[in-house]
Length: 465
Picture 1 (cartoon, rainbow, N blue to C red):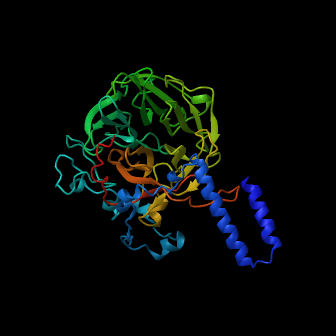
Picture 2: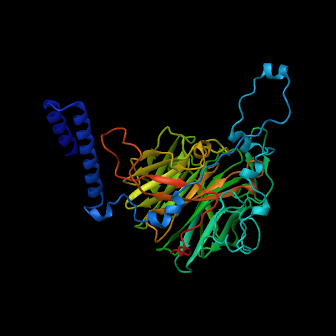
Picture 3: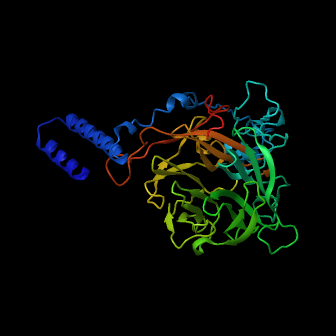
């Protein structure tokens, strides 16, 4: 219908004696009207729902007023000899170089010391409930939180949030000369909270195996990105995670279950889902209770997605390849008003890179890439996802279209000292650009992650569910 209407209008205008500017603006007006019509149709004809999602902006207006960063790269220490400069000209140092240099004069900018730590048990009043991306975050016992690459669930029965992640409180080393920085498996840490700010350490809910070298959880192997969901039908808490060997050749997923959110979790087995290699992964539970796995495959060149079985303990035979050839990893999936969204990162090891947002009408695709969602900081901050890598997107109940983007600022020199970057993510406003294959704009809205050195949830919005 839209294509026919557009063709008729083009024929009419081309056959008339209108000036070129009139023709152009008429087409623009027609396309905008058509886009508005598609938005109304997409929302089931409910015009009241089509307000470009600005109703929640009053609460989050202060969070959309992003902060800018002006970090000056210090001059190099010492001078290079003219002979050395001639033999190997030195390229300009970038902020990424400074970030990865553990001896950089800017180290404190990216990894502030313990003096500035977020301490929920010793706050100064005005700092209560404030998030400081990149600072050390202490639990209620005064120890740095160890929940990297993780995710959060809200448990209805206990009315409590649970945060699961990699427990990396061990020494960083390289298994071999060309190997990536690593920490031996210690296990999966779990923290509980009533307000998403003060977190109690519930202990290691899935522990490493010390003796049996054939076990997936042997300390010499790799356990990354654990995610937990609850199965109402079985009453079980189910954990999926990336399982690998030290050389990242196993490329599998592991599954564990527990009767309680605080564990202990019983490890079942590992497998390559659908017969494909699997590395960075996540799981997503839809509104209808169906759960899905999303994982990087084919040497991280594409993502695969498919539903889990009803007990969440295995994959089904259904799988789709998405974002083929785009080399994306660290998928974080969420949903708003019937549209599925996903944040991914590039594949650059521990080094930060540019995030991309994607959207789809069906979780099985097709998926469209929307561009970089990062707003604020400076150009380098946006190109490096604020020097972090996403791991999860958590919805804020009572604030439509509002989420927390949860990311890790990896410290490859000392992985136990990696930091957390929590920032407001808002779905709202018209899409940034048209689809590649059609006139008009997509029916989904813009995804924006806003940079702040310091921020808090709107007043009265803590303990949101």
